[in-house]
Length: 227
Image 1: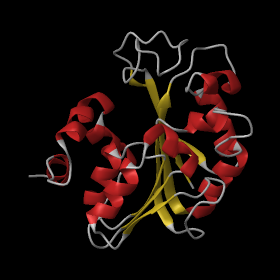
Image 2: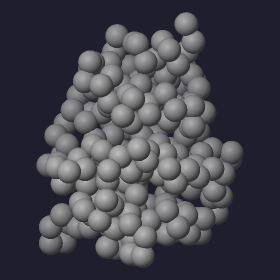
Image 3: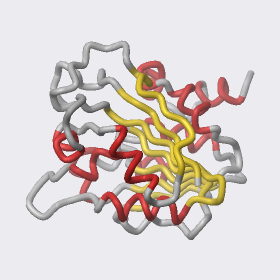
């Protein structure tokens, strides 16, 4: 069985995890990121830890995994991802609740930064005075921690055409052109983009992603940037 096949069937993953695999294109995401055993990986916003389970299996004994989710997001996702990392018993995996403006990694130490369905959070304001980081600062931090030839792999919910990122963020969506412009200001360069990463859905794009009509059924795009 291939490495990819073993990962998808690994005992460390639950049936709930596997139920997400086809819907979220798990195998394709691993291929897109060109993840390999031994890589140093930083996963931002793991949510409840669906993809974290795959990464824990992938890094093996020679890689490193840091999962970083600001504590303010616990109100939305709980502590499932933290528990998954802690229960794995892997000494080379750790969880950080620090702000994304201060990534928990040394300069030029990370092979892959993985951010799935999350960059829009930088424009989401859940309450007075609460933000998850200034976009330019967060993307500069990502560039700082990536190794030369390291990659940022992001997948996010697609915004409707004709609106800016501030409005898209309120819908929990992102505008690909605006993300690219911000990220390339850090010196990273776009190496791959797929505006139809997930497109076979009736998502009208102009409703929040938590709306029952589109929850877990949004149209999504993928971008890969290289240092």
